[in-house]
Structure formats: structure tokens, C-alpha cells
Length: 367
Image (cartoon, rainbow, N blue to C red; front, side):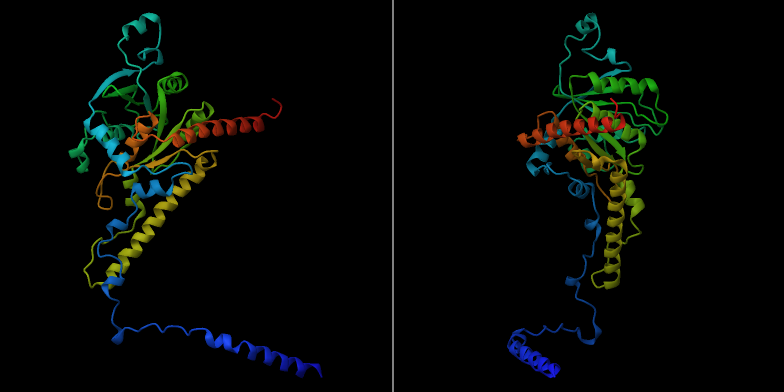
């Protein structure tokens, strides 16, 4: 006997909300294209999809850590102007730390009395990671920067791994010094590693190190060990991923960049190919960063991406201008140098050193 009553109540409740359902607007019908015509060109991907390919600048933005800011156009232009107008010269080459200017016995110091104590930037990296090529790209003038094949040969680039045997210092307008170091790993020599580590530990002029990583190989065991060394000694560092052009060539399928205006299938196919290629490239760098443990650092270093050569997919060089800015910023020479950035750097050093101490305690519980 209760069931009919429940049914009546249910019907009344439905009737009471009927005015609400009538107030809901009906769906707007999707207009159909008469005669099965293809979509209009303005609703399709662009005819030329080359600008949709991720460049090192896109990777810089994607992997920028918390606390870092993207340099403004004015800051980039200021850094370019500094390097374009600068005079460069190879200043010294040393195979032993005590041979460095300003280091060693009193008699040695007197011989280098005219040596200016300028801020120094150190480039580190595995053999054939692209350190010397990066040096040449940093020193390009305005005309050379426009040409993917043009670059000064201030630092000799060899196809033979481990060619750079000593610390090579380049003086930039008597304002800063950029030091290119011998590569470590295969074909590297123990003596070369000793001078680099000694330089990192003792060199007072050192402002920051830039760890140069071959993007095709990723962060190797030797790179990871060096990162631990930098963290342990509280040395601020950035990571520069070179050879991004080679990664793009490997990760992207064959793409026809330009399609005719009314070729719908070709334009859609090119768009999908670029989308897949970008996803493959991001997955590649995500894997490198996660496997290396860099993402687990208390404060992530700045990750910078660069291609020193061009190809069909990346027709020009990218990333070297941002590295120029990072170098000047490290030496306190960037336009409107941010106090916040300096604070982030200091926090990164202390946080990473604290993390290192916690790790050591876990490894040695009795100490």
C-alpha cells in the first residue's frame, strides 16, 4: 500500500522542477558543412608548421625552476651589446693549479703583478660535450650570429674526444674571464681532473660554474658525481644542455614543413607530426632530469638549452643569448641585477649543503 504513495510523491517532485528543466536552453546545433566540404583554411593549422617546433628557448621556459625569472628583452639586448662590443683574447693556459696567475709562491705572484682579479666563469663538462663550441658561440659578433655556419675560432674545436688538456682562460674586455676546462670521462686524464677540482675548491675569483651536458647522452655518472662535488663545496652552478639540434633531428618524424593552402590532409598531418615530435623531445629531457636526481636537489639549478648548429628543423642558433645573460648576472654585471635572484642563489647553496649533510648522516649513522 505504500508503493503507490511513493510513486505519487515522486511524480509531484518531478512536476515541481519541471519549470527548471524548461528554462534550460537547448543545445545549439553544430552547423554542418554542406556537400561534405573540407574545413575552411582559417580553421586549420598554419601552412608552415616550422614555428611550432620547440626551440631551446621553449625548453628554457618549460624547465625554469621556482625562484628564477625569465630575462627581459632589455636584459638580453644589454648582454648582447656587451659581448658584441667586447674584445676577446686568450690570456693563459695552465696544466697545474699553482701555475695559475695570482697563485703559488711570492716570486710567482710578483711575476703576475699586473694580473687583474676579475670575476671568473668556469665551463665544465664531459669530453666532447661541446664546451669549446659553446665558447665560440658566446664570442660571436652580430653578423656571425645571423649565420648558422659562422662563428669565431677562438677556442679550438676538435672531433677527437679529450683534446682540451689544460685550463684555457679567455679575457673579455678586462671585465670578466671565461675558463674552458679539460673534459672528464673517456679519454680524460687524472691530472686534468685534479687541476679542475683544485680550481673549484680554491679559486677565489670563481663566481659560477656552468656544467655543459651533451643532450644526446644526458647526464652521465661523471656529471652526477661532479654535481655532488659542487653541492658539497657550496659552489653555485647552472646546467647547459648543448646539441639540442641533434635531439630534434632524432625525436621528430619526417615533416613536410610547408603545405599548400587548400591541402587539408597535409596541413593536419604536419601538425600531428610536430605535436608528436615536441612530445618526444620533452619526454627525452624529462627522463634525463628525473634519472639524474637533479630534480631532487633542495634547489634546482638553472637549466639552459642551446644549439650551436642549425638544421632543417632548427634553422638558427638558440640559447646562447640567455647564457650570455646568465654569465653577466653571475658576475653582477647584468642590467638591473635583481636582489631577489642573488637571494635565491644564496638559498640554493645553503639548502643543497644542508641536504648533503643529511645524506652523509644517513650513510654514516654512527658518526
